[in-house]
Length: 510
Ligand SMILES: Nc1ncnc2c1ncn2[C@@H]1O[C@H](COP(=O)(O)OP(=O)(O)OP(=O)(O)O)[C@@H](O)[C@H]1O
Ligand SMILES: [Mg+2]
Image 1 (cartoon, rainbow, N blue to C red):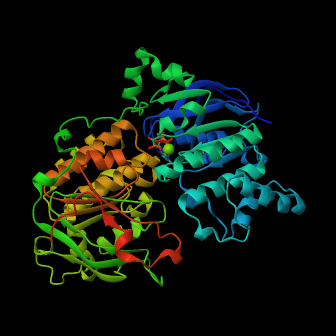
Image 2 (image 1 turned 60 degrees about the vertical axis):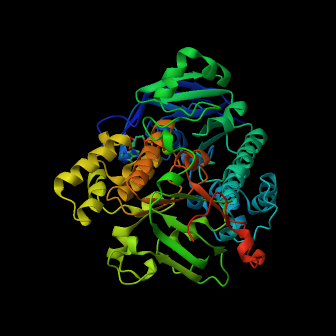
Image 3 (image 1 turned 60 degrees about the horizontal axis):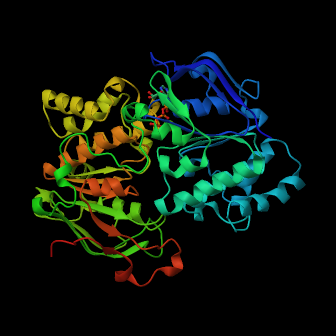
């Protein structure tokens, strides 16, 4: 069964904003149709999906017009709509995977025997050949996304809405997650609405593309028609759509840097000595035998599958986690008066002015109540004058397309806007070493180019960048050397240290 979705003059405005987050627009999606929803970061894609799923809290804003799913106003209690959020972690609730799959069915009040029989079927349908008692915490990001889909498969909804389901998935697993989505759609015949910036992954598998602009729908039609119409090309580029089979160039400057940073390297800032890393209380390292030295002006990409230990390595290099064994050592140029050589031993104030870190999950990081004060904080703490701080804030707002949001609360931003703010706040005071975890996720082509520009600018100013990233185009654009981590996701494989992790392109220094 499937339900149609219709909108007539529909818009939604959050109470603390003066313009609609989405719409107004008219729209008709027929029962069983598969739609890819595109649009710039902040265009209102997530807001629309939440409206369709009936999870926009009524008191948080104001609607105009009408939005109907199957002829009725969306209501999550009916269970006709399955919603998959962007962040796989946020939707794993229980410690055993079977309980997660059962949750939606229990909410629908299905009998226990039905639920018990359905759980293994749905796990299998999504390629999770694991027992229901398997611990949820042991799943990789891609597996968690499949688990969320298994829960939806079990509910057999009439509408499926998915918000960037592959954004946190490594490129090798993204097609697998997409196929899992298509499996659920094929079995339920549900109407499907998916938001994703990675256009190529979906265009051969959807019936229609809808492009959301600032003031409503700017284009819609079958994918071949949308992407081959020369009259539309400019509109799509203006909306920041990633055009299929083409990667965007940075807007200005920077391109001469692509392909390597070797000509501009300065002194060594940070190096490791027989380093292995692990999360606290783990008995064995997640990654071992890490040998690297990081110079001023150098970019280093840390790559590898979900679970390979990339974030753990980044946190250890940033002095936020203790080394499992071996050492992270700051050289004189970075130490600048700090007595100890290990960043982990520095007091937080010494650390903050020398090494900037952006976590994988942006919302964990915000400290103030507006975008502008969040950006000012670092420069002011580093002792910049008010005028210098202001100029830096204005520059970052402009390049990252956040100018109109200067007074907005950080927690009220869209997914892509939050990511840009967390990166910009870290870049603002120009720390010598920048360590970033998935800096580009959730970006459209234009905001992506803005981020590249800011990183190239930091490198020009003699900072070093360590980026954990699945985004190969980004790593290429900033001329990153690559450190590839082996797959240590299963603890048994630990043991042969030096061979699993290696710097691929040009390990420099001693
Ligand atoms: N809870 C909220 N309160 C106030 N404004 C919000 C809230 N959530 C989103 N907004 C604003 O509404 C607009 C649309 O946000 P939405 O999250 O729908 O965008 P999006 O198209 O999904 O963007 P992205 O691609 O970055 O995820 C943005 O300007 C955003 O700042
Ligand atoms: Mg969104």
